Amino acid sequence: MFKAVDSRASFPEMEERVLQLWRERDIFRKSVEERPEDRQFTFYEGPPYANASPGIHHVLARVFKDIIVRYKTMCGYQVPRKAGWDCHGLPVELEVERELGLSSKAEIERYGIAEFNRKCRESVFSYVEDWNRLTERIGFWIDLDDAYVTLSREYIESVWWSLRQIWDQGLLYEGHRVVPFCPRCGRHHW
Figure 1 (cartoon, rainbow, N blue to C red):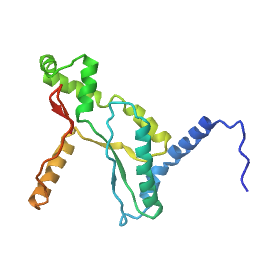
Figure 2 (figure 1 turned 180 degrees about the vertical axis):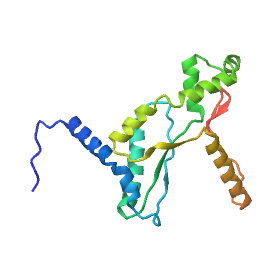
Figure 3 (figure 1 turned 90 degrees about the vertical axis):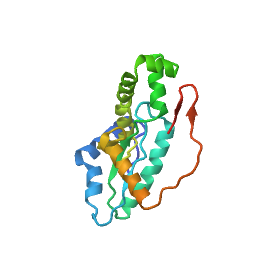
Figure 4 (figure 1 turned 30 degrees about the vertical axis):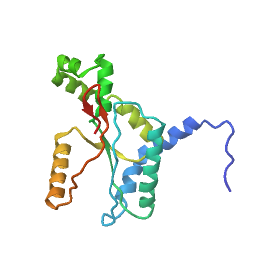
């Protein structure tokens, strides 16, 4: 029924052949476009930070996400999958501080806020190729070519627009919550 697997099989070669086949035949795009537009399941990736190498926990998260979108695809839904990159937050700033050898808010201010922010914007994309390679190798099909980026003006404006819509409908909850805070650098992580 099945061909015997050669005990000397080169799994890396096999992997590359499968990935090449998917690329040549544009399988991901076809898996989306060949489903009816009137049956959509929208998926936006909760974006990872691209300023650090992906770890095993990222693989696990992507596998869980992939299970959902593949299941919906197999059920006949058109499932556009838009990738994203989270470019804000304490992890980005702490990485740049380490890189520059800064250890306090005062040192950042002496260095220059504008220059520090520029370095943060640069650092966010330093590992994108590692992420893209991992994403392809684990077979996580997602549109990396048209990814949303949380530091883009369009993205930020869309968030403010969404908040306004929620506010206007009386759906915004006002309350108190715990927010992770870095006392050393005087910033919150959120």
